[in-house]
Structures are given as C-alpha cells and as structure tokens.
Picture 1 (cartoon, helix red, strand yellow):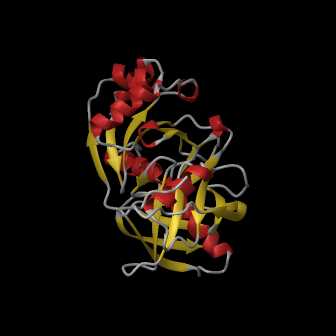
Picture 2: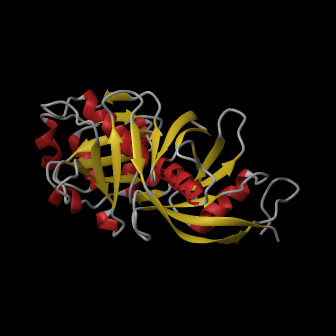
Picture 3: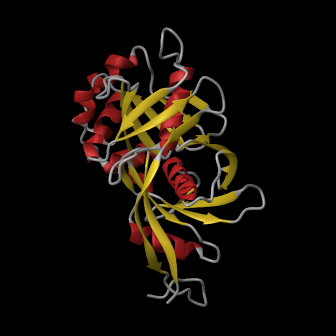
Length: 300
C-alpha cells in the first residue's frame, strides 16, 4: 500500500502538545479528494494541510477537517510553513500561497510566520442575545452588558465568523455550548463558526481571550484559530474598540480551557489584516493511503 509522510505540527505555540495541532502532508500531489479526507480523518487534527504545486503562487495548500474540505485555515498555514522553514525549505522573507480562498501573501520573520488575510469584511447582525447566549451556554446578560459598546457582528478576512463579545473571563470559561444550536446559528448567518472573546485575559500582555466553536464543520471547539483571530482584528478595528486607537499589534490568547494554550499575534490597523505565530513539530511519520477505486471511491 502506498504511504505518504504525515506530521502533526502545533501552531501558535513554541511548546509541543500545546497550541493548535495541524496535520501536514508535505507531498500531496496525486491524492484524490477522498484520500485527503480519509487521511485528515485518521490524523484527527481539526484541519490537515496538503501541500501541492501551484502555477499561481509558490505553493498550494488544501485543507480538510475530518469531515470536509474548508477553503482556508490559518493555523494549518502557519504550521505548514513553519515546518518548511524547519526543514530548510523556506527562506526568510515574502512568499505566496494559493488556497481555495485565493492567493495570499505570507512572510517568514525569524521563527514567526505572518499570514495576510483577504480584504476585511464586517457586518453588524442581530440574531438576538437570547439565541446566541443559549447556543453558547452563557447568561444573556454577559453579552448584553458589553453589547452596549460592541455589537454582535460577522467578520471575515477570508473565512467568516460570528464575533461575540463577552463581559468577563469567568463567563466565557463557564460556557456550555449546544452544538446543534451553534450549527443552526452559523448556517443562518453563512459563517464557519462563533468566536466569543473577552478583554479579561490571563496573560498581562494579552489583548483578549477567545474561544471558537464550529461544530457545523466538524470542530466542536478549536484550540487556537488563526483565521478567526484575523476576523476579530478586523472587528475591533471596524467598531473602534479602543479609545486610543487600535494597537499596532495585538495578542489573542486561546486554548487554555482545552489545555492547549496558544497565542496569535494580530496586526489590523490596515488591510490586509495579518496574523502571526510560531509552530513546533510534535509528530513526524508516515501514513498508509487508502486505495483509490476505479470509480474514485476509496475501497475499504
């Protein structure tokens, strides 16, 4: 049976077994969609990045959750490029990557990979505090309290999220999400997930603490989310969250309640919004590739 090299790379962390684990398949050329999905299902990371050649950019990445393909994934992009740098296959400076969301620019600066998002889009929405609070499993008052200053809104720098401000970390930590209600909510808004955040942080240098839920695409809770962090940066800029103006660089912490703490650096003063982070390889091996049937269906 054919095998391919496969890795688990922990993004937005400098320590293994923390941050957000991404599957990385460095040589994915010739794999079918079903084979990629099967590999992602076996690795069981929230997303697995498959590296492919590209005519439009330096390389192409496709991303699969254990259940489906998604067009963009920030932490898997950081993970794949950090691994390429670790292998000596990526030099410092500017690079491009083709995804199903288009061609994005990224930069390797030291051991930090910076990924530029698409043009930021934000839109205030009103699904109702009761509905959102029920889906998240929090008291509606914890949302309405801060909602006087910061509204519920969808935001995207390539992948859309419902951004939900929460008043205190204690409320966010006690969330008890309802996956079915969250899926219905995100489907109704046409977004990938819900990112709830608070300015009440664990780290003194952190700007906000977040949790991201996307059961509709097979991710009940994501440890540390690059695309959502970029969306939050766009949100904070659009709704003028800081009296003295948006900081030149923000740090979003995430993953502590999953025992996978990580940090995302965000630059959002202007487009494109960029997210940055380090990554470390936690597992390096080979995986057996299921045979492709004559009709394109994997034989089991």
